[in-house]
Image 1 (tube, rainbow, N blue to C red):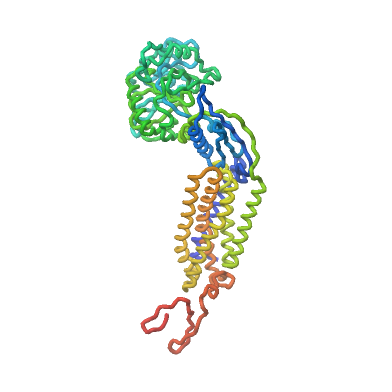
Image 2: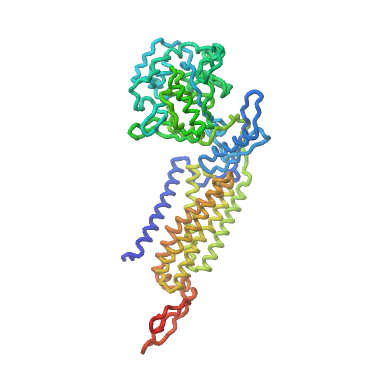
Length: 610
């Protein structure tokens, strides 16, 4: 039997919805079978318990932590904990000294480190540089590098190290040179357009790494790059430092106003650095990605692109203007994180626009993790883990069962009301809620796998509220169809006209609902964010279901004899909707039966009604 052309479009829409649903459940099955996902949604702290971390601030000497510092640290930790989803963690302060982090599940070491480390990036000028290990170094410096600035670790910085390319791509990072499309950015010398032109300072300072650092002559330092910063004590510490020894930097005192003797994070170089000239809190934004080539295509070099705020832009510009005129290695600007050098690029041009990128042999995963921490701000303190305990759920399975029972009761009430009010048409409401429930379940399970979303009791409450929100959209649609039928339109025309008019109301109502959930999610924290997230998610699913399921199904039903003929149990019975029975009237010599509507019919020129 041929398909009615009127039904082709609804069938296509329903087929698309079926494909979306099957695809989502197929993805969940694959992720649970071959990945780390699970078929059931992850539960939050109040329903499944988790881990409690007590963090104590790491202080130097007799320093004390202020309330403002502690509150700032708490706010940043909250952002870091929830950066990969709505985990429902709780972060509080206790005793005016410590921070307590309660997280669902068992966090791994990477998560713990991301929470308690300061991740404060600082920019310090390089005063001296040498290989990281105290081993005899060949006197020759034949690097064989095709450029004069930076090809591997051994250029323009510490080339007393043998020119072997054991780790050439890492660390040297970058040069501060302009590039088309990326003005003033840090760009690796091997990809910059000026890579074939030797830098003026490339051949100077090669002996610096092999000789003891200069000592102070007693004069006051003129700036952070002045060699008067180096004292005999710093020289001795620099010569004795062996970056290959484990824990060599443990307990280092990092005073931003004083020089620092430290190592590169991979242990290949050691440095004497001047005082901090650009602080981590002057970074406005940080984004990780692949560095573009001169033709605009992405290269294989991973970078962290930074934007500085107003004061940071000024400070960074002033420093790079000064470093350009200095000899190697004092023309380098070291980027430190937690007192270790990430990279120490050479300054070849002044960067005045506050836009820079940092390269240093990062993997894309490492760069994204670091950029994420920097974007949320620099903690004013570093923290040590004081205690780590497992905690039991505060509500537990009984409250979850009661919440689910409440949801079932709500569904039954909606089901009963729909059958009483709309009879057989009410079954479409029930079917729509079931489809919405299936999509919500798989969405929450997938978000738990991909975004660490955990369903807490507040989130369950949002799901229960969504039953009413979903039913409300269908009621608006059905009532509009019935209004059109009351006005005398055939059911098929009433379905199309009613949908066009109801759609605007549904979109407006769901839009307001989603906006409220979005604002609540942005302004709230912890459990309230879980409620806002589920409410916003179910609002989007409601729109999807009413457009791709409810309307197409009603359109198909309108072409059937049961619904299209206005059966008394269809919910579209004309008499039940207020359309009065037909009354005969005389028209000429014959009797013509015409239905009399509630609405007065327009009159013709001869005064008779149409």
